[in-house]
Image (cartoon, rainbow, N blue to C red; front, side):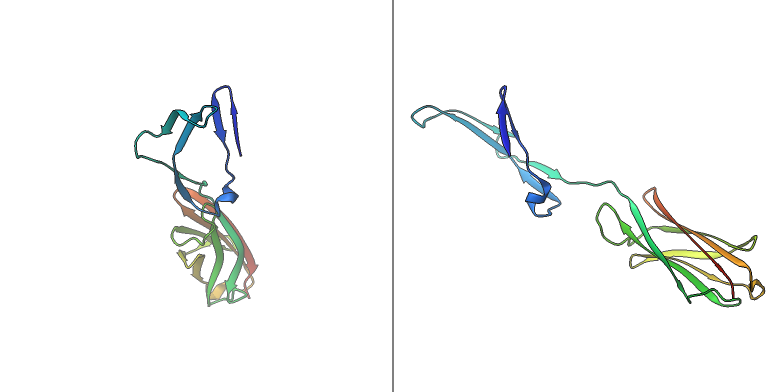
Length: 159
């Protein structure tokens, strides 16, 4: 799509028309011809043999999916993990690195948990105390990459 008005040439290209590329290189060459088809003026930008580079960028965002757990229900005295698939909004791909902070409580008491990211999944791993049967387990998982975070909460009664 192009236009020319008041001495200014404008060209618009839809990102979709470029086939999903992430970047491209371009230059502009314009010329004026007389009634006989002879070139009477020409301009190239940038000058010489250089070219402009353009890269499409999206801001980094993180999208946390639905939580899953292993095993399905937390049990007193057993290992337990809360997992969530995390997707990068800028690339659309899975999160491969980052920091996972796990805030875990059993009833009113804090419980130690470790967090990690692997294969696009953020995980909080913990061991439920043997004395926790019947209490409410609350997990808040915060996944952070380059100062951008996504938070997911999970809660269940311990069997």
